[in-house]
Length: 188
Image 1 (cartoon, rainbow, N blue to C red):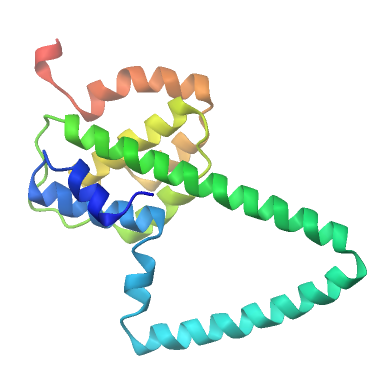
Image 2: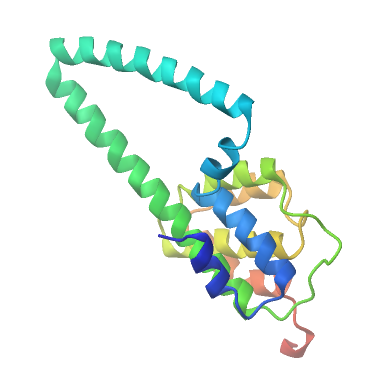
């Protein structure tokens, strides 16, 4: 699992600013940050209580349905569990690759920018969790690394466009993306 300490260790060769941005963005992406945030306020307690009530109602309804057709419920649970595990694995693979790209980068960073926008991260996470092909994961990782270095670089439109790419198209874009995101005039 990718935790805060792993991120800090893997980003040891980058500036403290990038390390802090990367930690915040990646912890948001993989979900480890949510429990810390939720535990800090009364409104979070109220939200947890409301979720518990909803979960109890869903569990009751699911129990009634399971009694009438347990095989369907078993298949649904297996499908949902498998899908969620794959999504988490994809998110974590993108996060690890983004850390690697951050460690390799030589470009200048935006010292004045704040952390990556939370709404941007929410949308990014929805797209990144679907990336199972290596080339697509790498593309999402490069985007995340670029956004961590310079928040505001990739618009929501760009994220949507990237989400439409297949593995072959992503591999082609990965060949030119370093020229765009990690521009190094010495490569010319």
